[in-house]
Length: 199
Ligand code: ATP
Image 1 (cartoon, rainbow, N blue to C red):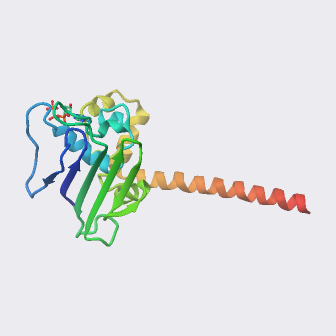
Image 2: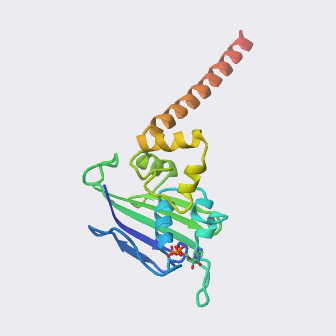
């Protein structure tokens, strides 16, 4: 799996549609202070499903939408697409190319797309879980994260190690299965109550 390109439009300082071609050998982005380097990384994080506005240096999710400048009015929509080369099928899908898109409107309307087809956030999270790029992955360490890890308690540090070791996927599957079991048990209890009343 390889990130081939990043398309950004209306996201933070990127008012116009901008395409970043991640050619072989790309190791860094340079530019003056405030030119948008961190915004590129945040665009990647956001497209992958980041739900915390604070992790994106905002207060509310609508803060990711271009908020205007001296000569431009604010925009109504932010959109980021990531295109991955998946010829090695590292992402568990038959597609040799995977494009994920997140679109967000100022009124709170939100869309996720997988290869241009509407999908759920859960589908995107599932695809990237434990690939090194998923939710809470350590591939993106933002400013402040290092301090958080150092200042965290043992539980928080354990979570970091479990994420790095790939245990997170199984913990999540276990939690989901436990929830399904609890829901099923509640249904069984309800059915036996009804059967008892009818007897
Ligand atoms: P540094 O080198 O100082 O870390 P940087 O190149 O990483 O800077 P960013 O932090 O990515 O720069 O970009 C900051 C710029 O993005 C600021 O000028 C800020 O006003 C602008 N910006 C952030 N959110 C928005 C938004 N919603 N609309 C318009 N501009 C925004």
